[in-house]
Length: 371
Image 1 (cartoon, one colour):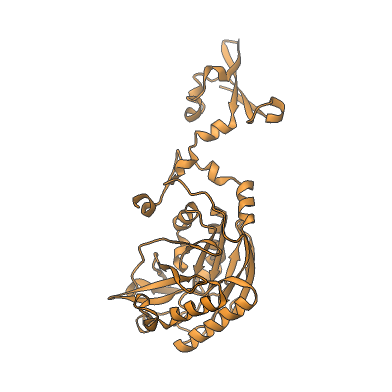
Image 2 (cartoon, rainbow, N blue to C red; image 1 turned 30 degrees about the vertical axis):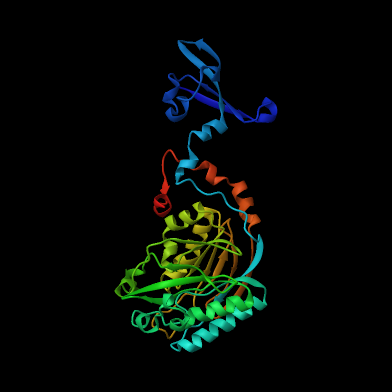
């Protein structure tokens, strides 16, 4: 069997789609690409000849119809939501990389001061680190935990976030704090709108249970309970998906957020000195480029004397996988610009959503499917 092809642009053919003329000796044609050739009509075969006891066919193939057989809309179940028009297309984000101490009141006041500074520099969205009001340890989580649902009197950390969001008229992704709910503890991130109200609450879905001999062993599951719900929230600065630290390792969650129409994913996190140098930036860029979406991370500053030493390096990644802003390991407030028109540009440059092979694989959004 022989096969050859030449593709001609629509400008030469006077057609609305590009055609590819394929010369082949194969018959039946389904032996080439069964998923496609079965849809061909006899009119698609525009010429043939018989030479040396073989038949050659010249076939006009529409590349757009070829792509349609891939069923990209079926790659997302339910189908992906289109990217909506955000309330604002360009704004500044502030990432507050904070040093955390054993003094909870000091941590709360220090976080407030950092948020105020970020807002003074023009940030309309401010992100805090993972576990910013408490040392990161299983011993500390029960001691510093707050009952968020019981109201702000029982949760001074979220009370501060609500107050400062309202006073400064900004959106805050409040990092995470240990949360007490009944007899369970969670690693929880609250999102506050400019009115000071809680717009969403994300409980860390994937608990940080790892064991790298001679390097680091940590098991959040000794004290914490895993969350059960992916979290996506519409805000004054666009639709935001929320993950916490270890959540970033699971690409399915980011894919789900992108399929729900998120403009940005925020990951408060505290990678350590073993996995941080290897994976922190790599994972952020992977989640961004795979989903053509902005990714923002915020870590605690490094404290070499702490029981758990954070890597730092809070970062903003663009939808092409580019590092737009980052820092080292010391305390810092990063101010960077998010421009959602870049998302549309990159998705036009690389139309991945239209090219997914729904005939071969699917991402199933269980929560959305069952709602």
